[in-house]
Length: 342
Ligand code: IPM
Ligand code: MN
Image (cartoon, rainbow, N blue to C red):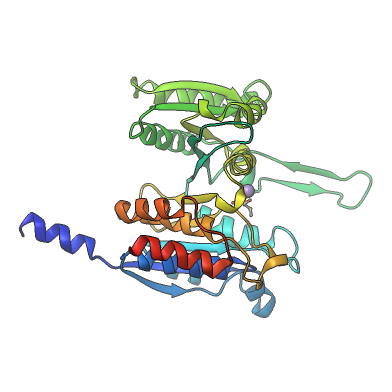
């Protein structure tokens, strides 16, 4: 087949997207993200999955193994937000969000940050690569004598060489495609001496294969200061699951607010679909008011398009989100759609 025809047929490929709107503002912002993707001219075939706190309260389903198997057949999953104040903390987070991250082996949580931090004049641009399947998130530990004065609770952090190495490798591979070619490891090696030592050796081992990439190390407490006072120093940051969770909220706060923060839960080995979601939560207090900002969901959809080989459309969406007009949820979605289809 002549190359030109192959190129055209690839561009016309239909991507099969599983959509989990979820709870609160999740369905509203996801609808705007899909509107923008379609306006950008990308062919998608969507299937809605009714999952989240509301579904759980209705019939007890959180994420069954058979639903998980259905999700495996898609090219990508677009998630709005999950979490319902009527459901005890941890039930939906563990049963739905973390179950997808673990079972679909979404071992990289990639979160880009672009913005001008308070007190700065020029924008920063960096990416946090958060390990997404290990650390304190695995649920290792337990409780003894619960509810008594002698109660004991432990919560371990699991770090495997394989899990850390593949995450760090992704960070270096990403840095190799970027102008500044720099990776910073963030950990707490002065206190978490077992896990920190494994992370440091895995980082140094991968770094030795990427001799043209600059490296740096920050303790996580110092990184919190630099995120605020000197965010320009970062290009690619790689860190463990819990440090990454906390640092990326801070990253959002110094980059225009959590309402703009997008994320990609990636299975870089492509043994199944990757999952894309805004960093923000379900914001039940404003659900249904039409005031939620859909930009983080739209930017998450752009990350999905990057991963599906639709980088040109993703770039157009990101440009259209710059200085997006204010207004309500659908007004913002309409304005961004108009810009990408222009
Ligand atoms: C995030 C969220 C989740 C996390 C919660 C909802 C389990 O805060 O994606 O950052 O801690 O990973
Ligand atoms: Mn978080």
